[in-house]
Each structure stands twice: as structure tokens, then as C-alpha cells.
Image (tube, rainbow, N blue to C red; front, side):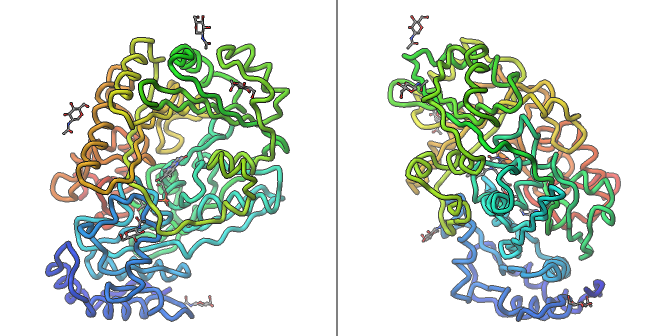
Length: 533
Ligand SMILES: Cc1cc2nc3c(=O)[nH]c(=O)nc-3n(C[C@H](O)[C@H](O)[C@H](O)COP(=O)(O)OP(=O)(O)OC[C@H]3O[C@@H](n4cnc5c(N)ncnc54)[C@H](O)[C@@H]3O)c2cc1C
Ligand SMILES: *[C@@H]1O[C@H](CO)[C@@H](O)[C@H](O)[C@H]1NC(C)=O
Ligand SMILES: *[C@@H]1O[C@H](CO)[C@@H](O)[C@H](O)[C@H]1NC(C)=O
Ligand SMILES: *[C@@H]1O[C@H](CO)[C@@H](O)[C@H](O)[C@H]1NC(C)=O
Ligand SMILES: *[C@@H]1O[C@H](CO)[C@@H](O)[C@H](O)[C@H]1NC(C)=O
Ligand SMILES: *[C@@H]1O[C@H](CO)[C@@H](O)[C@H](O)[C@H]1NC(C)=O
């Protein structure tokens, strides 16, 4: 790959970026042609480059764009559209795309699986090019050394499937939803049903490849430990384009157990939740019991949805002793292989109907509902009055629910500055506020967004403070955004402290060193240091 040369087309790009409006524009052949020429100059490739660059005159443009839109709220005619979409097939395409977007003076949005809750991987307030990583999806699994190399555009379902193909006693610690993309998920922290045993995805990353702002393709050794630290939880898109991660695959037993228990308020759900708060964050680290709280008509339901890395005969005595209110019996448990638990967690109904591991390979392109998510951390058990207020609020509102994800176990053993993800010891569980709807009207959106914000406000006394912490992968623009102008650092400190606590300062240092001109900027990126900007 050639080194960057000052690119003679810059002037044309600057002109274009100034004259482009944010909404749909008439066909813009110049940027397409100049960008393509630039790519040709910089990319070492046998693929015809015209096949990987789409402008809005290309009939495939709307499909390529929508394929990995996962929030229907950002799939409207008024949603800002990219000037171009680039779908790299090999590393050198990524390197060239960075250089060419930079010399064109347009923003780059990087998208792997497109699951960003706020669509920040594929929308932008400024003219931008969308770098869609979905073709870079190779996965190599090395069971002997318990490693896998996974490219950013792979989805987690593919990763789980490829591991399972080679070994029935290995898995990986990452999200439940199989269509989530590796690039955003892992660089943003990444957690799933094994976090109490194995920590986050980032706790199991041992190497990575990234393309930096100069177009260099770096690995752990050549990027250095600071940048390697930053991209394990700090969000990749502030620092460059992640091409792949090398991960440790983790041992899982041949037989695991999963179960679900539902209780309404009339069935003493409040007592169940009170006991859950004592047990779920402290129990055996092979046991992950997610708690879902949701309104159901005039009442509400608490559901415990759980994975145990072991057989039911070992699980039942643990729960009998620690969590008697659950009243779990053997007939309430399903035993299966780890891969079965993955299918079940994603879709219990499909599992009951006999879905095979191949379902994990389904990408379900161009499919989305409307949604909003927010997050909180709980460090002291919520008292009965708090739960009663919570129930009352969700029943009145009617649709917004919560998921409590227990921490403890391995999560408490990892120091808060080992990775940018700071929410370790002392956190009992994380809350996700969640509402999903299908009515496309603006009134529906306003109502449901409002519900999550009202509930968030009601929960203030019961959650972390100073800062009120949040989880980066549960992207929420309500907690602050950046306009990447003069106040970029002050704006960044607001959401940065919530996502990263004290690690924010180190992220700023790394950012300032690797991308001092802030090319990789977006609404919640890490800002550069004001003293070095
Ligand atoms: C249905 C659903 C279920 C989820 N379940 C979980 C869960 O169980 N656990 C959990 O931790 N999270 C979960 N999430 C959140 C998810 O982890 C994040 O949304 C994650 O960022 C998605 O990664 P992606 O590649 O699909 O997203 P994208 O939208 O493609 O990217 C998200 C962010 O990462 C950046 N990015 C993406 N690829 C790259 C790259 N190659 N290089 C640099 N930056 C990049 C983007 O620019 C953007 O800022 C879920 C999300 C959804 C929609
Ligand atoms: C281009 O790619 C080929 C095959 O991967 C490689 O042998 C060659 O060295 C590369 N050239 C440059 C300039 O990077
Ligand atoms: C709920 O708790 C009450 C009081 O402890 C008890 O009498 C009742 O049996 C419980 N109901 C259920 C369904 O467990
Ligand atoms: C367990 O299964 C039995 C029999 O199917 C059922 O009656 C009971 O309600 C279940 N218990 C729980 C806790 O779900
Ligand atoms: C986006 O909108 C188009 C047109 O209404 C629709 O066909 C498509 O299914 C939508 N895709 C997503 C991901 O919402
Ligand atoms: C938001 O919800 C609250 C509580 O349900 C309600 O009182 C308020 O009117 C709502 N506001 C908007 C703008 O919908």
C-alpha cells in the first residue's frame, strides 16, 4: 500500500463538501469519479474498484445502505444519506478509503453490523462517506491454541457458529443477539451471558488490526499498547478502522442449562426482584441470570432468563439454597450444548421449534423496528419502595421495560483501568431501559422516547451518581453529544465521563496522539486534548 501523497483532488472535494446539502441531492458524479480515482491510486487490489463504490445514482445504493440499518427511525426520507458508500473487500481498500475520505475533507462513518442504537455508524450531520465493513467477515478458528481471528464485518452468530463447527466445548463471551457486528460490539466493550465467568469481549482480545488516520495497517505490536488499550472498550471509531480482532475462545462444558421463570406482581414479583439483587451478582460465576421487568396490562412481570455453565443437577441445589423464591425445578430447565443456549437466548420460540445452529448465520439484512435504549449502573440494591415506584411507572406508561444484567464474578476481578470500560467492582448490575415499536408516526416516536426519559428520571435516586454511568454499547445521545467544533473537549467530557469514568482522560491522550486533527470524529467520539488541538 502506497504512502499518502498530497492528493491533487482535494480542492474538488472541499468544493463538494461545502456545496453539498445534508438532504438527498441530485446525482453527484464528480465525487464518485474523483473518489474512485483516488482509491485506484491508493488501493492494491484485483477487485474492480467500481464495484465497491456506490453513489446515489446506483440502483443498489438504497439497498446497500438499508441492509445494516437496525433502527427504523434512521431509515426515513429525511434521514441524512451518505455521499458515497464504500464496501471494502480487502484491507488495502480500507486504507485507501481512509486516505481518500481524508483528502476529500469529508467525514467517514464506519459501520460493521449497524446495531448502533442511535445510528451513529451510518448517519452524520456533515457530508460523509459510509465505509461498510460487511464484506470483511473472514473468521479463522484455531482450537489448539484457543484463538480466533475475526474480521470486523463478521456478525457474532457467524463467530459462534464457526467456533462450534470446530469445537463443541468452546465459545466466546459476547452478545446474545447474533446479528450484532464484531467491529462495533467488541470495540465498545461487548458483553453477554458469560460475562460473570469470562468478563467482557474486550477482556478476551489479544491482538487487533486497525487502519489509522495515515492509512497504516497496524497490529498490536505496531500500534503500541496505548492504542491497543483504547480500542478495547473506548469505541473503535474515534481512533481508526478496526479490521480484525484476535480473540481467546473460552472453554464451555459439553452440557449447559438454561431456564426462564416469569412472575407477575400478584405472584410476588417484588420479593423475587429483592432476592435476585442479593443473589444474581454474588452467586457462582458460571450462573448468569438476566432479569427482565415489563408491564403487562394492569400488572407487570419479572422474568429471570438464565444460563448456567454446567448441568441442571449441579444448578438446582445452588438455587434452592441461594434463591428459594425462584422455586426452580428440574422440569423448568433445559439442558443442551452451549450453541443451543445461544439459539435459545436469541429466540426461545425458534429454539422450541427445533432451530439448528445454522440460524446463527442468518444476517436478516434490511430489517429493523423503531427503538430507544438507555442505561444505568446500580451499586446499592434498589429498596422495595424504589421497585414499587418503578412498577407503577412502567404500568402507567405501558410499553417501556427494563433489563437488569448482573455483574460480579470475573467482572469484579478486573481493575477498572485495565480497559477503557470502567464499570467493574462495586457494580451490582447494569440496567437497560428498552422500548421497541413499529408505528412509524412521529407522535409514536415522541411518546416512546419520552417514556424512556421519564423512567430514567424516576430511577435517579437508585443508580450511580457523579457521574451517572452509562454503557458505551448502549449508545444514548441523551447523555451528551459533540458538535466537533470549538467546544469539542468540553462536550466530550460530559458523555465521556459517563461512559468511561476516570479512563476518559487516558482515552483523550491516546486520541490526541493518534488522530490529532480529529478526523475520526462523530457525535460521541473521544475529543482531542484542548491543549494540543
Ligand atoms: C438487537 C441488539 C442487541 C444487542 N445486544 C447486546 C448485548 O447483548 N451486549 C452488548 O454488549 N451489546 C449489545 N448490543 C449493542 C451492540 O453491542 C452495539 O450496538 C455495537 O456497537 C454494535 O456493533 P455493530 O458493529 O453491529 O454496530 P455499528 O452500528 O456498525 O457500529 C457501532 C459503533 O462502532 C463503530 N464501528 C463499527 N465498526 C467499526 C470498525 N470496524 N472500526 C471502528 N469503528 C467501528 C461505529 O462507527 C459506531 O460508532 C445490542 C444491539 C442490538 C441492536
Ligand atoms: C499488492 O498485493 C500483492 C498480493 O497481495 C503483494 O504481493 C504486493 O506486494 C502488494 N503491493 C503493494 C504495493 O502493497
Ligand atoms: C406471596 O407471598 C405471600 C406472603 O408471603 C404468600 O402467602 C403467597 O403464597 C405468595 N404467593 C406466591 C404466588 O408465591
Ligand atoms: C416449572 O414447571 C412446572 C411444570 O411445567 C410449572 O407448573 C411451573 O410453573 C414451572 N415453574 C417455574 C418457576 O416456572
Ligand atoms: C427502509 O425503508 C424502506 C422503504 O420504506 C423499506 O422497504 C425497508 O424495509 C426499510 N428497511 C429498514 C432496515 O428499516
Ligand atoms: C411524557 O410522559 C409524561 C409521563 O407519562 C407525561 O406527563 C408528559 O406529558 C409526556 N410528555 C410528552 C412531551 O409527551
